[in-house]
Image 1: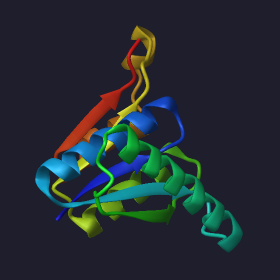
Image 2 (image 1 turned 120 degrees about the vertical axis):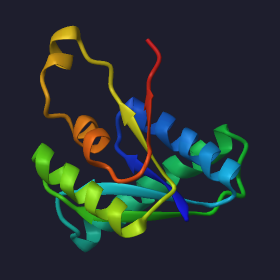
Image 3 (image 1 turned 45 degrees about the vertical axis):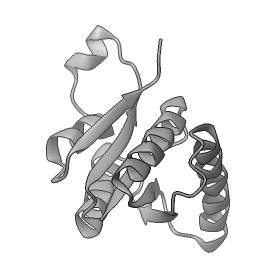
Length: 137
């Protein structure tokens, strides 16, 4: 089994990576970082992998967990919220992790009333437990 992290480049993405590393170490399992991209063009995919690898290494350093084993999965999913959500959820179904860690941005009271965010779709539709990490105020 593994702990999966839905990665994105917002500030809560680093926090999700850090918490994912902690959860993987606690469970003595691997960390799998899932990043949804528009397409899997070779040059863009390699640039994404390098950037994500740097972010994972920073998270492992911050959490003092350099021995956590990890892997990156790039998944083609497009821009649309529904497409990104389905690409992420499909990968989670394929991987079957023990836990999915996601980052969420803070939303205004009005923003909370509207459905449609990737985080909400994942929380509602994931077949595995979801741990939501959000940045402090």
